[in-house]
Amino acid sequence: MSFCTYSGEFRNMFTSVENQFIVKYLPQADGDAVRVYLYGLYMCQCAEDFDGESAAKLLGIPYEKLKEIFAFWEECDLVHILSRDPLFVEYLPVNSAVGKPKTIRPEKYAEFNRTFYKILQRAGKEFKPYEMQRILEFLEKQPMEQTAFLLVAEYCAKKDGNKLSCNHILNKAQELCRERRYTYEQAEEYFSDFNEHEKELSHIFALLGIYKKPQESDYAYLEKWLKGGTELKTVYAAAEYLKKGTLGGLDLLIAELTDKGITTEAPAREYLARRAEVTDAVYKVARKLGVKVQNPRPYADEYAEKWLERGYDTESLLLLAGLGLKLGYGFPELDGLLDELYRDGIVDPAGVKAYCAARDRELRLLQRIQEVCGVIRKTQSALDMIAAWRGWNFTEEMILEAARRSANAGAPLAYMNKLLSEWKRAGILSPDLIPEKTAAPRSEYKNEAAIAADVRSERERYYARLQEKAIARADNARKKAETDEDFKSADAACRNEEIELARAEVFSPDEAENVRRRLERARHDRAEALRRLGLTEEDLAPKFACPKCSDTGFLPNGKMCDCYKKA
Image (cartoon, rainbow, N blue to C red; front, side, top):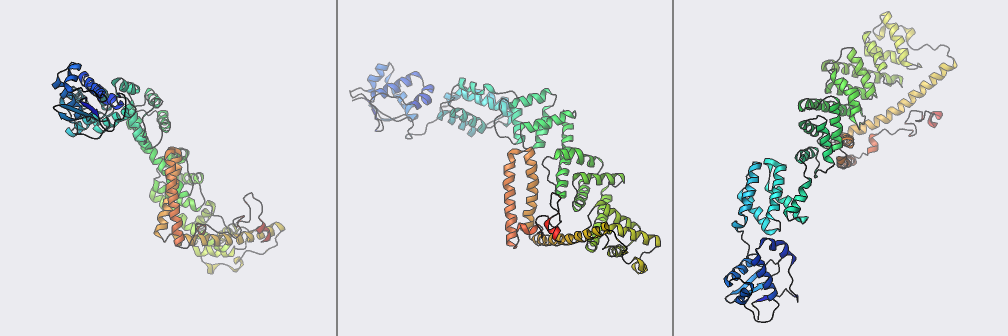
């Protein structure tokens, strides 16, 4: 009987060598060890008597060395020595979990350790003993050549510098093993596309929130910027400013800097800080005006940058935008208002605050006039008239008296202005001094045009009252909702996320979907809060008596509504 035999798991009728042995063990074993292993594997299927001494003589090695070799393979968990005298060995599958833990022989990695420590020294890094143990254990378990692993370490050291970590080296080596790149030549081929600017481009990717390995086409951007005279630190500053985005978006920003002659870091950071301030002002003003802005740059270039250069701060702009919202302004109208204020020398925060406070008082008075006279549009000219009347030293009581006497006029404001100008010339500053003849508009002969104008005015007052009722109901519903903290929080979140979505759609398309999900959650929370309060989203919007014309009497195309004809 042979001195070797198969374990019960072997069923082959021929000598087979498992691939794991060839890949994992054969490269690291010397010739005699491989010869002994293979010959013993062959002897497992021989029925004739053949002992260990005969095998040693046939292989041309001493019997003691044969036993030492089998002891080595036992350390590798490939065999199990059942008896040493006489020698009797049981072969195990290469992937068997049976056996003792293998010890790492220091002499096996002496040269590897010397070279590896030189790499660490050049990188200005020092690994702990347990980290070195992890690396040696990796080499014991994986079929990667030591020289290939050293090439991996060299690559990571060039890329990371003094931030080199054991985890990075092992992860990169594991990545090569998954691609079955075990030899030095295979690893060298893998790293052949390593670009000298990979470290810089990887840093730019990290600043932009891009988590992937730079591709060959990505380097064209960096080369373009550097050849164009832009410093690398300037590129970093631009990427930090964007925070998220693509190389294409970064390219547009760097082109903007280049067009302004900015290529160095300090001026770039100063410009970008100003740019961020202007962009932030655009979004805040847009939100206050109720205007949706997708791309802030046109608004920044045409409006916000000019406003800030003239000395208006963000707080002043928001106060004026709040006033503009009440007057139905957009960016162009607000810009016209700011031009007027600038010509009048109203720039400082105190002056703007006083102006807005005065305009608010005029608006409140205009609303009281509307209650008396009906439809009067909230316009800058209407507020200017009220400001002029106040400048004539008329009290609110006198102005409202003029409104009551002008209620039936075709053009109430014009008639009020006529009355007040007459009272001013006459020095009449209190209602008890008003002559009886000016108690109301004179009912003189009116032609057909005047009669038609009066009819139209009456209809406009009718529709104004309808609109006011609908708007008042909606305002009351919103006031009720805003007493609830959950609704206020969700409503504010909706407004914020709508602005963020507009920003993301332009600058960070990859983030847009996440913002949409947050917006949907905020809308859901707002709807839940309204449901708990017994309200709906529809309650917050005016419910007009005529949904076709929204209680204006005219359709969007300008044609007269059916309800107007019946009124």
